[in-house]
Amino acid sequence: MKSCSESWAEPPADEHAQLVADDRRCVWHPFTQQRGWAGEEPVIVARAEGTELIDTAGRRYIDGVSSLWCNVHGHRHPRIDAAVRDQLDRVSHSTMLGLTHPPAIRLARRLSDLAPPGLTRCFYSDSGSTATEIALKMAFQYWRQRGGEHARRTRFIALRDAYHGDTLGSVSVGGIDLFHSMYRPLLFDTLKAEPGDASDMERLLAAHPGEVAAVIMEPLVQGAAGMLVHPPGYLRAVRELCDRHGALLVCDEVATGFGRTGRMFACEHERVAPDLLCVAKGLTGGYLPLAATLATEELYDGFLGEHEDFRTFFHGHTYTGNPLACAAALATLEVFEEEHTLEHVQGKIALLGELLEEIAGMPGVAEVRRCGLMVGIQLAEYPVSRRMGHRVTLAARHRGAIVRPLGDTVILMPPLAIAESDLRRLVAITAEAIGSAATDAVGPAAEAAGGSAPLHAPA
Image (cartoon, rainbow, N blue to C red; front, top):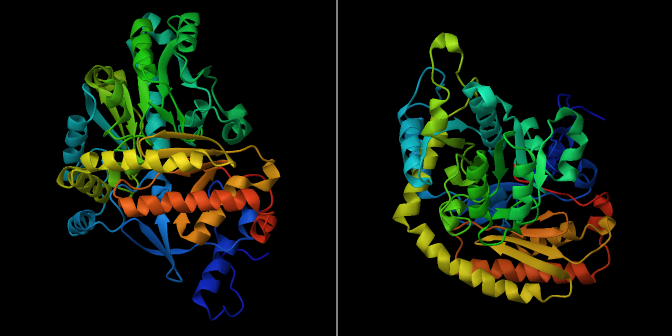
């Protein structure tokens, strides 16, 4: 087998064929069984317009998962494009270790204004995983630096089937065995609460008095768990339990933030203000990697001291607060206001609920779970070897839509900017794809792919 660095024989004349060949030789795709990937014809995205992706052959696909849950206002939005170009004429990158720059300052202030009350300090990073990892380290160090009995607070409570990213700290508070069990020897132990069950959360906190540094959770809906929706009032109950037992509350809004649930942040639905808030994905409208961990002033004050006290938060990334990404984020937030995005998305949320009623009644569907524009369509039980979620994905792609499976749960999470006509088309294509996958014998593409069902989590 050739390595990527070797020279090849004369390449094929067809550019698409060459790209496919080079991809198979050189690229290792995330959350993808490469043996199966090599047996499929890939979609190579060459361009995008609005809420459509366009491949190298000019075929168009509805971006039914917002390019992994991050595109908000559509691709090539003129307002965001212009902001990035303008910043390119100024400076593309400068470290924030000992320096600062206008876009990062303005964005931090804007996020503080938008976030739930009390979240006044913004620490930048570059992905959802790093945002949650930072929150864990902040919570741990905060209690250690308070000293005395507070230093006993070293444990974390997460929810069963939680997903908070792929770095080792975020994996430690994860709860999806398929993703996380392989790395168990590398992880620290955490307590797991039953999702949606406030009494179970209370039981864990009471069983470990003075030991819990923080509870970490996705508010309202657990995305990578297959869009597992919590009952109303659960988030508020967890906030009250954390207050009663003296633990911090970390809300991971990497997936749920920036309008996905119909509010800017999911916490707003139950008027909850966490001690730490993690955001990423939609922060830049899907343009550039950027994340932020927002903290209260009380928590921030716990890190202040003289140089020799060594109370500094010793954490940072090379591209922390990248100016181009911050410029894109500022423009994304401005578009929310200028286009009244949150107001307009309410009608789409209602329409989506109506459209999904047909899918919920299909014989190949066990359950439809939804919160705002976040949808998980749980297929009926099939053998893992049939890869039903993946077969639905291929069938939808053939009909002009990009969807992704989480095992045999088909995920829909379109951009907030999607037109109602395209929303109707996306759901119709998904219904056709489910029907086709449920009735057809295993096709050649699925035969070639083989292996277990692919699972794609939000990174």
